[in-house]
Amino acid sequence: MRYASLYFKDAVFYTIGDQIDGVNNIPCSKFNNIRGCDVTNKMLTFAKTIGGDFIYMNDDFYVNDRFKFNEPMCKGYLQINPMHPPHYQTASKNTLEFLKYNNLKTLNFETHSPIIINSKNLIELFDSINWQEDNHFIKSLYLNYYPPQSYTRGNNVKIREPNILKAEQFLHEYGCFSTGEEFLSNNGAEFIKMMS
Image 1 (cartoon, rainbow, N blue to C red):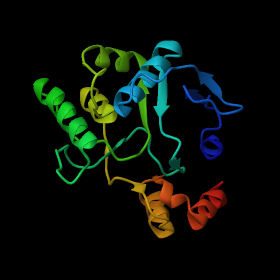
Image 2: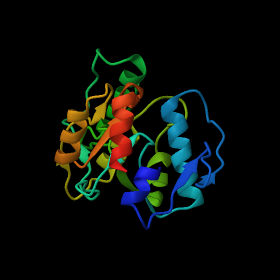
Image 3: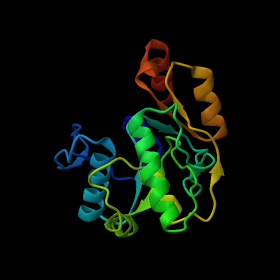
């Protein structure tokens, strides 16, 4: 949060559900044990409570001034990959099913990078989806339903191990990266401190 505030000087920050001292919070009970459903509920809670355009990003996303918010990052097309864990395969299946049924593109925007979302559009989209009972991909649903004027072809920028060179490469190439817990070892944590 402290790092993001360096790049979004005029932004108002909110957490939904979990509280952080000194940050605006919108109370939101856990919806259920399915992560995709719980995150969707939090985003809809924000959209219905605050409204307007907002940047959707997780607490493990890092951006710099090279990141293009008006060009979300896309990595090819969604597919069901048997190498992924079951919850990911389910999310892929449900997302693809909705997009194909509605004759929409099936671009993969699940790159662990931030996107801009319009609250009214988000509410409208999820009013047409049975999202409460199973996993799905919010970004790929939203950006294929409301396509951006342009997008950047990129990669999944999540870095699990403390690979500082890869983080620097992603920051240079895309203006962002995301971390897994393993990244936050001594070297990774030191790198993030130096960034802020």
